[in-house]
Amino acid sequence: MAVTERKSPQGGGTVTTAVPARLDRLPWSRWHWMVVIGLGTVWILDGLEVTVVGNIAGRLSEQGSGLPISSAQVTGTAAALYVAGACAGALFFGRLTDRFGRKRLFMMTLAVYLGATALTAVSFSSWWFFLFRFLTGFGIGGEYAAINSAIDELIPSKYRGRVDIVINGSFWLGAIGGSLLSIVALNTDLFAANVGWRLTFALGVVLGLVILLVRRNVPESPRWLLIHGREQEAEQLVADIEGQVEAEKGRRLPAATQEMTIHQRESIGFATIARTVFSRYRRRAVLGFSLFIGQAFLYNAITFGFGAILTTFYDVPTSDTGYYFAFIAAGNFLGPLLLGKLFDTVGRRVMISSTYLLSGVLLFGTAWLFDRGALDAVTLTVSWCVVLFFASAGASSAYLTVSEVFPMETRAMAIAFFYAIGTAAGGISGPLVFADLTESGAVGDTVLAFQIGAGLMCAAGLVAAFLAVRAERRSLEEVARPLSAAG
Image (cartoon, rainbow, N blue to C red; front, side):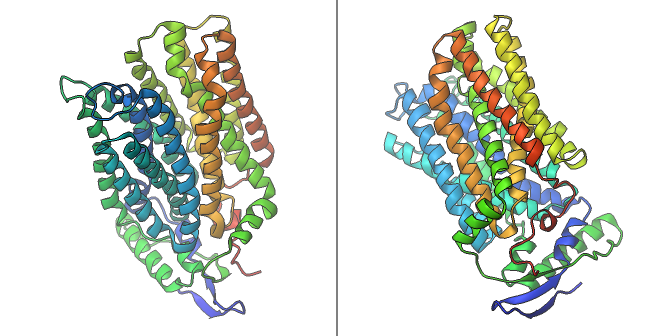
């Protein structure tokens, strides 16, 4: 089906097209798996990065590590710089993604990550290590904006919720891998003290290069091409995808009858983006803010001091805390994996509100049992695992929500803004609030940390119950009409 083009009074072309509907009516195919592998696996790298750095902190501070740095500098200064880089990268690349396209930026952000991680592996001084931790975060933050917008615009509406939920939850696969990798790489019987930690970063580079090879085949978003005056490219791209799917399925695809008319434009000003997100879609902005802050503080209430809690209250050896972490990381991944489909069938409002509320209520229950002394190291970890089973699906739905409830022209910038809020809250405000509480050795302080995280999750769940958008199985254009749409 060809596009119909005419001159727009705004100066660009006016196009009537069925391209979005044609993308949404596609059945699941090998082409969609390529998109998921090429774009979605970056969350595994993020989980690997964060976990590895936490686990190698002790080794880096030892004599003979090849780096003059303390453990506190690794878990404090370097971690804060990684978070700051992620926030800055999300905002910087988010704006560029909306302006210059999804593909150009998701290639660029991966290149930044690869280069910064490789240079971290050859660190010879603390300032060098700090600089390239910041730049690694800068690339990862940009990935979140570019990747989430591209995935949502390429995945059919029938599958968009579950795919986005599982992809964001795959962070925890990387966390498991980082925990197990650190055990091997830090074994001085296998690798010298100044070599093993470098190999952990080198593995991240190798995985990133594999992703880069697959990502080269992922196309630009046809939706973005349409709005930016490249409708013939969008038309040809969708026709090629349809040809691949028809060849795989052995049948013709049904015709897409729903069309839309848009006024093309090269770019949209930042003031228009801000006005759209915070004025026209004020309720959705409140929703996004609530979801990101709730999940950020819950994760800090549990995970920031989990090692200190185990060692302080249950005398778990520091060398064994990684096994407990791998267990709760598995619960974090299983939640999105097993619950993801329900976000497309039961619906966004019910699932988002229920996962937030359930995880908050369960954490309140865990705090009560902890306060009574009814838990040991194993049962506390099991309790955390159950809480995070629901919380992880809820946290992933926060990314899904902000990537689909705002107009296409603002999508990447909206993702970047709310990601930066959540990351800053989790990486800066969270540790300031929870560090002393979870490490004080006082039961009441740790209970309070749990209760703060649980309370914010319950509050976000209640906000979602009233404000969540029924976006399941609906096209992105129906959920949030593009600013360029006619009428």
